[in-house]
Amino acid sequence: MKASAKTAKKAPRSVGPAVFDEYLPHNGNSGYRVSRYELDLQYKVAINRLSGSATITAITLTELQQFTLDLSDALAVSKVTVNGKRAAQFSCRAGKLRVRLAAKLATGAAMSIVVRYGGSPRPLPTVWGDVGFEELTEGVLVAGQPNGAASWFPCNDHPSAKAAYRIQISTESPYRVVANGKLVSRRVRAAQTVWTYEQPEPTSSYLVTLQIGRYEMAELAKAPVPMRAALPQRLRREFDHDFARQPEMMELFIDLFGPYPLASGYTVVVTDDPLEIPLEAQGISIFGANHCDGTRGSERLIAHELAHQWFGNSVTARRWRDIWLHEGFACYAEWLWSEHSGGLSADELARYHHERLCEEPQDLLLADPGPGEMFDDRVYKRGALTLHALRARIGDERFFALLKDWTTRYRHATVATDDFTGLAAAYSDESLRPLWDGWLYAAKVP
Image (cartoon, rainbow, N blue to C red):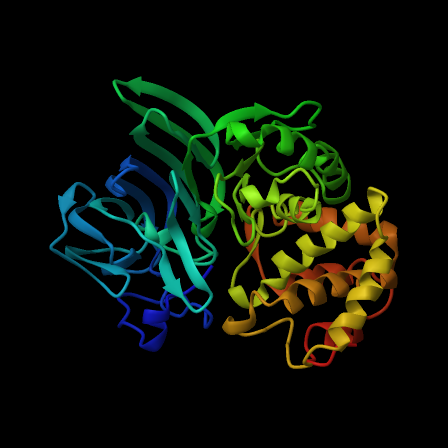
């Protein structure tokens, strides 16, 4: 979720061209492009000790002799090699691993970076709260949005930098590990189990997750794509009630938004601990025990997190200023599910939330809410209202055709608000500029 409070005070001098994102000015490096991460890790639950290596396959986008990776100060680096040769120099401070090579690499050169590291990972403190690697009562949760990936592995931690992942981790056998992608191997070695996951689809670093707990797996019946859950055995009865309509949600969203974007299917993790809010990862949503209480009271959140697999995870904002493209769309999916499942219609919900928004401070610009407000509930609701206003303007047939075009055209890519408004123009007989001016670029709620 966010940039650390420590680094927010003063920017460290960047090495190489910086990724320009005023919301996270200290994250990322635009001097190279990563295509694949391979993590080979060991984790000891009782003492919170993580160690191992990250192999990063990349290509230079400019001539480079030095570069940076984002990495928490809680993790110590013991060795760095690039293309099989030891780095001439490396250092870690202020959330950056700085690497200097003995000789320059030309633009377009391949880089195979291997970082050996270890330590006791902890969440990164940020202006939005703690993000990243977090210990549970028994196990681990990784909540990466927006810059928590660096809390547990070295990376180019920015949503515009998508890559494939292979995650291999060894931990004590009583615990189950859930990570992104397909579980391709599970090997028991004495009291340890080695879990290996492959995530081939391009994925932003904040959407890469690690979940460790005393979980049992449940396969969900009648799902149009593979759907499963990892949860404590004690919550199985409540889960079967509270999440029962998830396959129907999947069917609805496939019908409205287009094919589900991941080959490995969809996994829900329910931790044994309560969580303030659920969170999304690529192909995974994480809920707390408090969201699984037998009352079906979190169903709108279940719909919201599932919708993020299309809006936010597959189609990802290139810069955090455009976060309404994630949260506004997922919030509107809640309303569409309500309408489909016999609750309030999307129009009734829109009218209700419009009235509420008009009572709130009129000082938020949806297309650029500012880093302090990017997770404000007004971004979610105003984003959903923007889509509802567009639906009313162009009609249902064109509106849902637009959403399918959007998720297909930008599948596993990154986007900006202008990409959406430009595409929407093709679905309207009249200019949509007044609509965008009112909803996206003016502070007052229309």
